[in-house]
Length: 327
Image 1: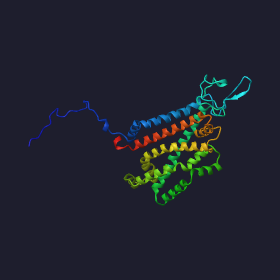
Image 2: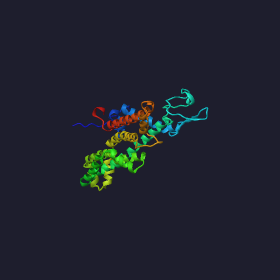
Image 3: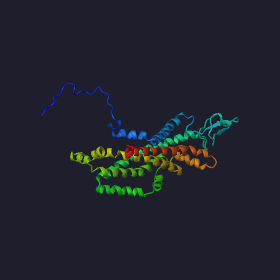
């Protein structure tokens, strides 16, 4: 049998050659894939743009405005009498009539003579604060409650779930009515009502994910190595439930914003002279037959916010669990 003896030049290094790498099958991290799917989703990016525009106006519009959200605008006429700019239609400087022709009111003024432009964006600030409070409640209370309930199981899980069923069976309006007896109206009452009911949906999702994951091999390995229960919950199980958690948070934000708007609309939310989207809608609703322009700005801002967050939620849901044809 002949044996082949390697000769010089049989093997060459290929470092100098131009080798094309197939980027379609190149390895990429999980979150990089999520980001790519999210950015490619036109509806999700549209929602992000809508929410971003509202956030920018809510932050900067009241700062650069000529009037505060609670200022009652008035001028002195030729007779020395103070005239309040009540119920002025939208106008730019030079387009109006009378004493207020040199002033700009992009959204007009309300029936008290306050600038609706500033009040609308001040109200959007309140709605965005409620949105961030909803995120905090979902992530801190709802997620922790669901993870503990699902991980310990047995009697503890049974008692915790019965507690949720009791709270969930009480109508929200009844809870709010009881809170209104002991608390002053305002943003504190809205946050308290969210603290009682907002986290229930998140806890159920976190519990379901924990029940599915707590019997996995890596959890068993951590237990075998002597890891504590808190370590397993927050270091092993929580990172693997982050996808459904983020999706649920995005969908709970518009619900919280709508809850605040509803409470302010029925008169148990934000009180004058403060304003929110709901209180502005309630004020515009009272004058809708004679001054319809007053209700349009807060309704449009509320609709854009809810649409934007819903589109972002849909985008996260598709990015975190893409379908086969999207991969």
